[in-house]
Length: 463
Figure: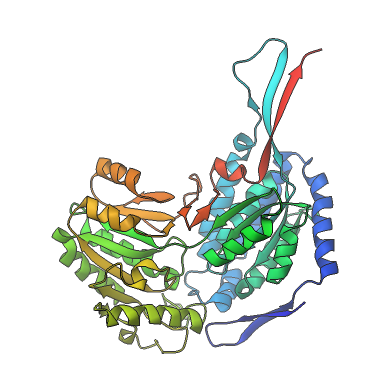
């Protein structure tokens, strides 16, 4: 057991602290989940869906207060945090609820055979462990929680220490919605506790969002058991602006894709490749838009970029920037252009780098902060080669007026999602997945139900 503290990046104050579970409490937690699941799985899907819908409504109605609490925990501006609930969580959860009947329906075997009933049913896996990150604590968690509950599983949620209170809010929402005791539980736990939970025979699936290193730890903990894992890990998502793009639109949108949430977005843009024919125009628009950001106290409604999650994360990005400049990069916008920036603190203003290449860490290593490198390219082939020159592959965006060209390019890019003329968005109707060191598995869409269920075949000869 240990004490976990939420240290606010705003001012270093302690927002809350919780004691992690003991071994006895951990075992009891899993036992409650396994016991409750046996009854929950037999609850009609319509009733399970109604509980999830009531929980969503609870979040929507309390979005302002919950958003303000989230701002204190991880530093996103209060002007933005409520929308994680009223837009993102609500959109994803309600879409998953709307497709549950179809996604979980029995699939008849074809062709039909006289004298037999044959079909495939999706059975719940049992207890689902969700290990969620701090950067979008509600959005990332809901991707698995809702389909898991709809499918008849119980859920144990462990949030990153930085956003422990978010797990408690999920528990409150489901309690208010009438979910039976034990079907959803939040837990404060150490890394060893999580390994022990994963190793328990009563747990049937693990969903994790976080770093590549932590993803390897999850895999090691699960390797002695035949259970599924869903991993969304690192990213270095690229954008490519073609010569036929709406340059002003592309510049404004990619700035938002790079710097929203202080650049701490799983699918945020971290590198941009621009056709030489429009490079100067794009740079001009990108720089002008970046200079319009207001860095400051995220509790101020005028602030649109707050501190990073902690000083160590900000200093990691500062080191990438310093290395790139030492190797010949130029900063067209730097943290020194923002009055609130302060070295050795989480407050780091957006940085725009040019004259960068793939010998620099800032172009190959995940930054997860407000820095972008922009490179001029000669043609589509060079852009694709550079976009694929990465250990990661979560999303890639193309900015162009040519739909056919974008489709052709998308076929060649190693990524989980291809965007045209948008970025940094999860469509709940599409599978959310990645390639290479970004991880594996899929959430959202009908495919998201597959990981939290297992197929069971029925082959019935008629009497």
